Image 1 (cartoon, rainbow, N blue to C red):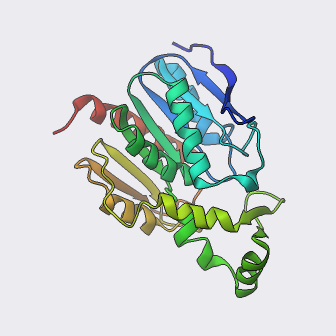
Image 2: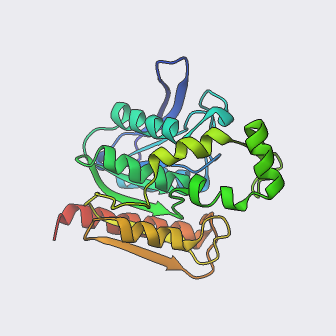
Length: 258
């Protein structure tokens, strides 16, 4: 119980390192995958860590390339790079069965990771999953002038609702993201899945999680739509629901198929 977390940096072999914090404990462990331009010190990550520590359950949080305490420039990142980061962290820093918890973009990446390591992913929990957002959502929100600038310069800066600093968007993020699409075909993951989404999410419409639910081949997949909840899902009620859903997912994973 309440094991002391350890931290470090995972060498990616290309001159870059991923920052991580890991708590030892029982399996199935829990791995948290954060959102676009988010980091591992957010409210949901820390709440999950505290919950797992109290339960004596293994837990891992980390930062992707160009995020948080990891090295690299955010604007040089792509979905493929961040997918590879998640896979590298999973392989190097976890052991045994794992439950993946993905927030926003992390929901997209967690689902891809569940496909990459289906034999070790015991269950999947997404929060406001932003599957395919660089393909389906981002381009449609650009004005004609922004679209022209992106085509001309290969880069634009967009204001952030969560920071005073605008964030850069590169054309290659959109182009490369097409190689990792989920919502155009069946998603052959068969473990238990729980998807949480707010009806008042202004960043990623709840219909995105519904589309993911419809694509999943799992026979134990559920979408919980929370009236009035926004994208961040970080208030007390959102955190409580996330933790309760995690415990329910642990039970479903232990019960196995059927």
